Image (cartoon, rainbow, N blue to C red; front, top):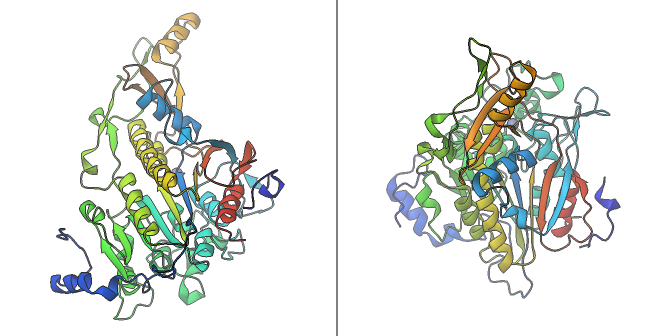
Length: 496
Ligand SMILES: [Zn+2]
C-alpha cells in the first residue's frame, strides 16, 4: 500500500579519557578551549545560532528496534510488566501494522518473504525497495539511492545516528552510506570474493578504485553527520583505501572532518559539545544490558531413558557485568537530542537503533533480548519527553523485520499432552522457561534452525509494528509498508 493512497494525511569535567587519537594531552586541551573550534558554523551546515525565529523547529526521531516484532515485544512486556503491562512506545497514540518487502536480487520483480536488516533499513531510509544485504543501493544495478538523512542535510537539518551496534552495522549504515552489501564495512576484505552472494553484490564493486563510494566506515566518516554514537572502534581503526600519510586510518578521516572522538560513558554526560561528536564505546557492538542467570540460554529438549522429555530449569534475568561502563541507549539518545536541538531553529533528523534485540534472538538468549527491548523503550521515553517540549516533532517507533522468539506452552502442558497420547510431547528447537518479575512462568522457544551445528536462529517474515506520535498522522491506515514510514518522515521535514 502506498502512502499516496492514504486518505486525509496532512501535507503536511573531567575529560580524563578524551580519546582524540594520537593527540598529546596538551593539544587536546587547546582543542577544547579554542572558541572557533566549537563554532556551530564550522562543522555543520545548519543555520546560525543567532538567527531570530519564532517558528518551532521541525524534528523527526525514528526509533528502530531491530528484529522487534510483536512476539518479541510481548515476551519482554510479559517478563517486565506482566500480562496487563505496556511499554512507553505502546502508549503512543497512532498505531499501524507494517508490511516488510524484500526484492530478490536474482529477479527484482519477485519478493522474498523474509528480510534482513540491510534491505529493510534501506527501505526505511530511502523509501525504495531493494534486495537482501544491500545498503541503500538498488537491486542488481547497484545505483545509490538517496536517504532521508542525506535529503535532510541538503535542507540544513542537523542529523544523528545512534545505535547499540557498531555504527558500520547495516541499520545505521543504510541511512548515510551506499554499498552493494552490508559486509563492505571497511576496505579490508572488500577485494575478497563473498561466496554467499552473486557477482552483483561483491564489495569490490564499491572500492573507490573501481568507481564506487568506498567502504561503509569511510563513507560514514565523511558524511557530515553531527552526532554518531554507538560501537565500532575496530572498523574505524582500519586503513583508508589508498591512504596517504595525512589519514592512514578511517578514524583520521573522521578527525580531519572535525569530529571530537569520545569512548567513555562519562564523557557522554558532559554538556557543551558543539563540534561534531563521534562516540565509539566498544570495539564492535555494545555489550548487552541483561543476560540469563548463569548465562543460561534456551536449550534443546532431551529425553531420559524412559523416553520422557527433560525440560530445562526455569531461570530469571540478571544484569550483564560486561555492560558496566557502557552508556545506555537512553543516555546516548538524550545526548544526541540535546546536541541536535541546541540553538537549532531548523530542526533535525535522528535515527536511534536498538540493535541487539535481534542479535540476542539470533543467539537464543531471551534475557539478552528482553534487556535490550527494555533499554530501547527507555530511549523511546526520552524521545517522547522531548516531543512534549517540541511539539513539531514526529516520533516513529518501528522494527525492521521479525525474529525467531515465540511464547509457547509451559512444560506442564506438554506433559499433560504426553500422558494423553502416551508419547513424549515437547517443543521444537530451543526452549527456555523464564521466571518473570511478577513471579509467573513464561516459556519461549526458537525454532528456525535445528541443525546440530546451527548456532544461529533465522529472521521470520511477520509484519512489524509502527507506533507514532506527532503532527501529520491523521488518517494513517492500519496497514502500511516501510516505504510509507519514509514518506511520513519526508513529508514532516518537507523534503519533497
Ligand atoms: Zn538479524
